[in-house]
Amino acid sequence: AADREALRVLLTFTGIGGELLAGRYEFAMNTPPVEILRRLRGGPDRIERITFRAGLRVEEIGEILERERIFTAAEWRAAVAAVSPRTFMHDADLLGYLLPDTYELDDRTTAASLLEAMLDRFAEQVTPDLVAEAEAQGWSLYEVLTLASIVEREGVHPEEKPQIAAVFRNRLALGMALQADPTVQFAISLDPVTGQASVFEYGWWKAELTLDDLAYDSPYN
Image (cartoon, rainbow, N blue to C red):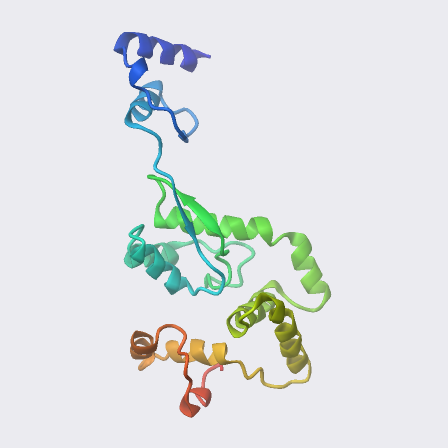
C-alpha cells in the first residue's frame, strides 16, 4: 500500500502520467517506485521468441543464437562453461538436457539466464514419474537421453522413431553394436586433431561417412 501511494505521489509531482506506455513489463519484488515509473515511461520490455528444434548439439544452439544476433557464440560458450549442474544431470555435460522448445527473451535475458530457462523447462517436462517409469524398465535417465539422442538423429519421420528405438533396444539386449551413423558423426567431430577441420568442412553432422569414419576408434562409435 505504501508503494502504491508513493507511486501516486510521484505521478502527481512529475506530471508524466500521460507519458506512460502500455505493454508487458516484469518487475522484481521491491522495485522502487521511481524505477517503475522510469521503465513505464521508456516503453515495454522487448519480447523476442526463438525456437530450438530437437537434435541440436550445445554448440549448434550457440551458432543459432549468434546467427539470429541474440548472443555471440562466445557468450553462449561462457554460459555453458559456468553453469552449475542440476541434480538430474549425469555430469556437467549439457547435451540432452537443454529442452527443445520456444523461449521468450527480453532486454534482460542473458545467455546464462536462457540456458537456465532451458534447464528449468527440462525439469518441468521430464517429471519424476517419467524417470521412475524408465528406472522400472532398467534404464537410467542418462541412458534414456543417450538413446533418444541417437534415435532423434537416425530417424527422419516422427512415426518411424519408435520402431528405430525398438531395434536399438533389441540390439543392446543382445549385446550387438548399434551401427548408428549419428554415433560416428558425433565421434569424428570430437577428434582432438581432425575434429575442427571436419566440422568446418562437413558441419557438425557429416552426411557422407567413409569406411575410415565408420572404423573410427572412439567410445562414442
